[in-house]
Every structure is written in C-alpha cells, then in structure tokens.
Image 1 (cartoon, rainbow, N blue to C red):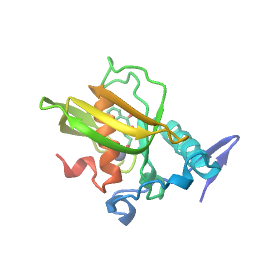
Image 2 (cartoon, rainbow, N blue to C red; image 1 turned 45 degrees about the vertical axis):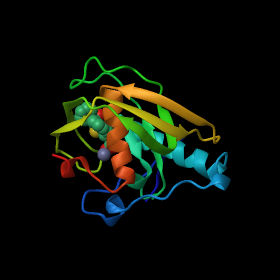
Image 3 (cartoon, rainbow, N blue to C red; image 1 turned 120 degrees about the horizontal axis):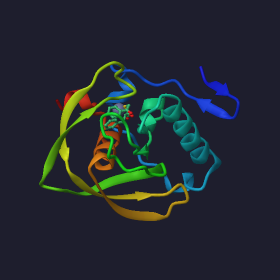
Length: 165
Ligand code: K1U
Ligand code: ZN
C-alpha cells in the first residue's frame, strides 16, 4: 500500500528474501528522462529514505527494478565526520574506477532491519551517472559517500551488504 503523508509519498520497502532484491535492475530508457514518472519516482524514493532516516536508497528497494539511486551522506553516530551532502539522484550510475585502497566500515540497510555488519569497500570510486534531465555527470567520492554509492549500486545488481561480509 502507498502511504501519503501530507505532501510526502512513503513507499513500502522490500525486505531481504524478496525476489526483487536479487534481480539486476534495468537501465532507465532515453524517453524516461525529464518525465513526470521519473521525477515522481525519485521524489517518492527521497521521502521513503528520509522517513526511515536512511543515507541512501535504490529503486529496487521500493519495488521498481530500474537503475536509480539516491546518495545522501550526513554525519551520524557511526560516521561523525561524514560530509553533509545535498542528496544526489543518480540515474544509470556506473563505477568507472575503484581505488586499490580499501577500508572497513559499518553498514546497515533499509531492506535488512536490525542488522549491521563491517564491509570492505574501495576507499574511492569514480562514478558516471545521469541526472533526471539526462545530463551526464562524472564525479569521484571517497570515504562514507563512496561507501553509500557502492552499497546502492550493489542493490541495482541484486547484491545485499550481508552477501559481502
Ligand atoms: O540502501 C539502504 O538500504 C540505505 C542504507 C545506506 C547505507 C548505510 C550505511 C552504509 C552504506 C549504505 C542506510 O541508510 S542504513 C541506515 C543508516 O543511516 C546507517 C546505517 C549504518 C551506518 C551508518 C548509517
Ligand atoms: Zn541497502
């Protein structure tokens, strides 16, 4: 059921064990950029992530098997030095480069409640993605934002953090 809280759209979040979380999500097609549908999907993903106090979300977590993620780093008890970012919607994100250096850090997941684990990830990633309008962007992230990017792109490939421990 879709829950409408004033102007917010809170979507149900798929839980570990559900098939949707194991699928490889499909790319957003050229004719979906700049569309009402894609704007509404990203807004509902943002509302759902915020409602659950998340720092990221991927479309398959809200039962949409498309390659859309949101990355929203902020300071939190586990990562007090994490940078405060304006949330970034990434459409069809691709990691172009993983740093050789890795780091261990604690992760949680909106689809795996009450479980945390230490996961080894590349310390830095270079990512290419498209905006909702279809503009191509290339950016590098390190530390906690890089961890969120890798966790969310894993969701697009049907991988959960618990599979990486
Ligand atoms: O994709 C998701 O399930 C959201 C997930 C993102 C994430 C958290 C931590 C590391 C990588 C990716 C969450 O937002 S879980 C909740 C959370 O805010 C958090 C959990 C553990 C450590 C830090 C933050
Ligand atoms: Zn997750």
